[in-house]
Image 1: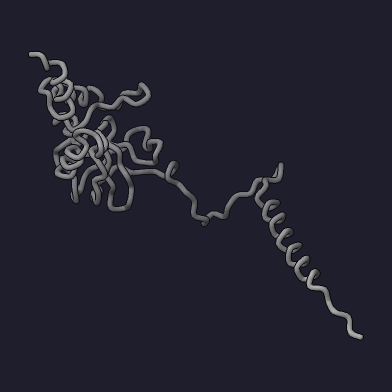
Image 2: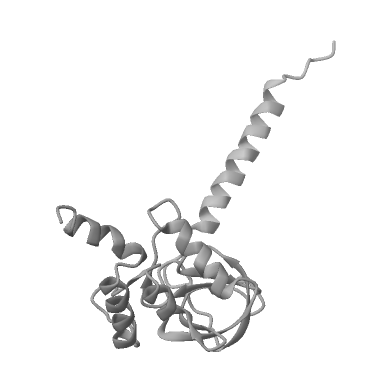
Length: 186
């Protein structure tokens, strides 16, 4: 008489195989003390925080808002010392549109600051469209405010502060509401 094989053995073997694969995966991901594993030289890595960015002329392909643009190579540039309203805030769309007029689909000179990247991996820079200093122009026309981040003044602070004082004294753009609130009873 022929003995029937149990279906339990193949299921148990398959389960054991899965368990071993899982444990092996955990073991291989756990660092072993005293052993440092480095990737081969040609392994691609995220270098967004460590790569260099050279001053130069670049083509703007996208205006993201009033203080951020994207270049042809995909690099995002944040205007140093500039804080424009977001698109969903008052003057946000106007700011983005004005920025588009200044730099959209144009070649611009990008000069990175000493601290090249911000916390989002964007290049912090001073941008020139022809002879127009874009950072200054955005502030001077009231489409943005001067930004002092974590108490550190931008390298061109005095120039940007003068632009902000100009816009504020004339109640332009982002400064209009402040003036209206101060003078509502006049």
